[in-house]
Amino acid sequence: MTTIAHISDLHFGCEAPMVREGLLEALHQVNPDLVVISGDVTQQAKHREFQAAHAFLAALPYPHLIVPGNHDLAENNLPERLLFPWKKWRHYISRELEPVKQDEDYVAIGINTARRVSLHPDWSRGSISRLQVARIQRQLRTTPETSLRLLTAHHPFWLPPLFAHRELVKRSQPALQAFQSQVDIILSGHVHLAYAQVTQGVIVSHAGTTLSNRLLLHHTNSFNVIRGDRERLSLELMEWGNQRFRLSSQQVFRRRDDGWHQQH
Image 1 (spheres, helix red, strand yellow):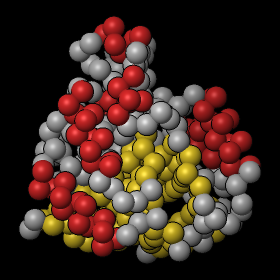
Image 2 (tube, rainbow, N blue to C red):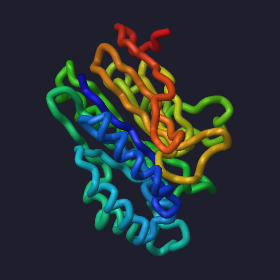
Image 3 (cartoon, rainbow, N blue to C red):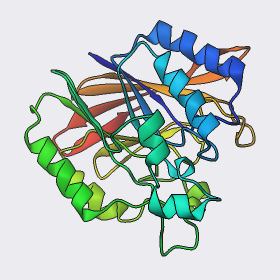
Image 4 (cartoon, helix red, strand yellow):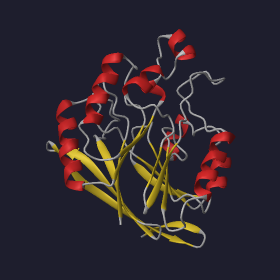
């Protein structure tokens, strides 16, 4: 059985130090095979924020896969954003923007959906390109049939109706159609809301903001734990309360011939 811890939207620069320490303690209890971090590591892509994120990653005693989010691009420095968008990311976080982690039980593939410039007036919106979809398909063709297949992006591939105004990642529907029967679960963040939904036979699982004080009303810091294999997956929501992370709820999914289904 594979155990994945999914954290997101850390927003170093407005993080809560007590929650940071509580997360490290909770991860010690989970003992994950892999920690997935789905973007927005910083708040304003400043050097000191990237330095804090670097220190956090150095304190993780587990393998991790990390992709950038829209907040990891400079918002107020246009020359940096246009000419050297990922210079700080590559210096402090990783040389890779779309990493791949693989062992005998799983393959985890990172997708960079953040864009330095967009035709949309809101540059925080994300996009997945046809070239990215083709790259993922090539990777999966060489993946053993029994290996759990996870994709990680910052931007959402499904949203609850109340959050539809946040908009899905551009080209989400063609991407989901291409991933049918090939991908088991897509992990993402961006909206600071934890939820999971099956769409087109693929589980779409979002994490809330794990460390920051940028919380939605009536929501707290959280992260997800995914346990299982290609036949059965459980998704555990871990929420912050009483100075520690605790199990709040659990969803169970099973895979059939036509894809994944939630078990009620």
